[in-house]
Image (tube, rainbow, N blue to C red; front, side, top):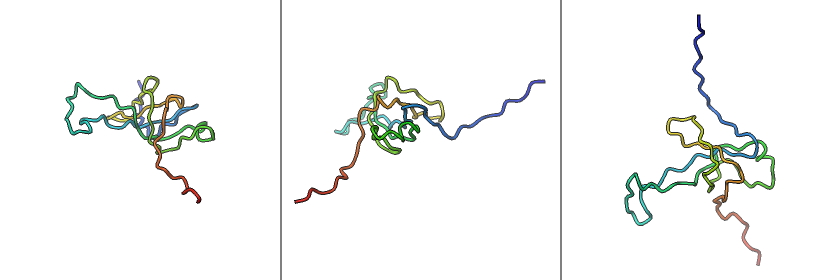
Length: 111
């Protein structure tokens, strides 16, 4: 008699090595000027928000990435995570994160 397989639902993805998990931004459907784009003309979106980072990245002072940072990443080596029905999660190597969007939070210049 065959055993019934348990349905496993994962709730968390932890990247290993120098990687982060990024939730890709929704693709743009209109241009800045307000022109609606047809589905075939989808502009590839390579920005997203970091969902979680690996322990290696968290402990590396030379890598300025933190959870919830908005990043620009090169999608070539991004690995999609089959985790959600709308699958917007990708495991991205740190070297493929090319920019971090930050607010200017430097202290005011002293006079």
